Image 1 (cartoon, helix red, strand yellow):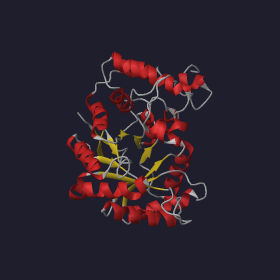
Image 2 (tube, helix red, strand yellow):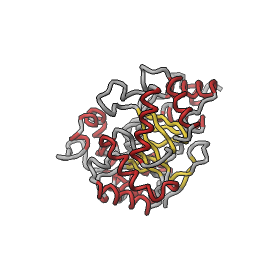
Image 3 (cartoon, one colour):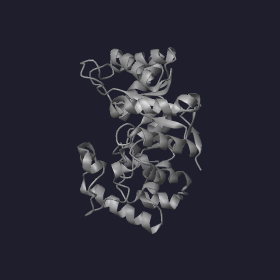
Image 4 (cartoon, helix red, strand yellow):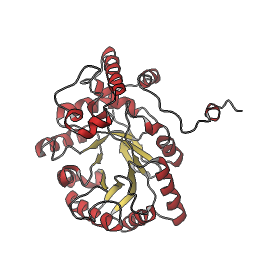
Length: 328
């Protein structure tokens, strides 16, 4: 059964699973997208994530139609950063692009406010102060409730939090990092920072781009799938070590009579720093395996055993005596 958690210290309650709509209007047609939305709502999910660039804006449009009759029961996120047209200014985190981007997203989503508005990546060409001031203005105008951040390093987020505190600007309240059994870098600094600063965390790609669904192994490759069809995912999850992890993880899931996708999502949910993993699907059958994670009972012993199947990332400091307490 889904539990509901507060996003950081905002007081906003969200379901322990967030549904990501990147497939809407792309890998999933409109009919399938709306069926998946309905299934998520029936399962108790009130948290939906999209972006202005998903399916060229069509994802936002379909999601907007889905939520129109119950907007205030839904916690909605979308994002700004990536190019939305060929225009030279239709990208990045400049004030111009943010102000235009939010208006376009509001129109496509058929709403007058966005609960959490993500900056989708880091913009090296725009001062962080400029971006934060723009987001603060949007919050004051009521067009967004809270700024949020995706794909930034911990030091970049920390710098932004310091600027927000100094200048009394709306701060990032929600972080969206990549996180799965095969991508654990967030454990080093992002998740500890989120816990320390009382920030919410919604993690994407809990299935490792499909790597943890049971379809992949050391000598096992499907003919179709995101890792096969999209070069970005092939690069992201192309290391031999990743396929070793996938094979051992699949064996572990089979030994415990649970679908690999269910177990992968449940493992991510079990991290106490994670507010909700973002699940996604191309069809209802794929969706069911991820939804089943809400009812899976992950024991501390299982969590440790699964974690041991992949490499724990090195700590942020080489002074391990401080981390272990051996210096006292």
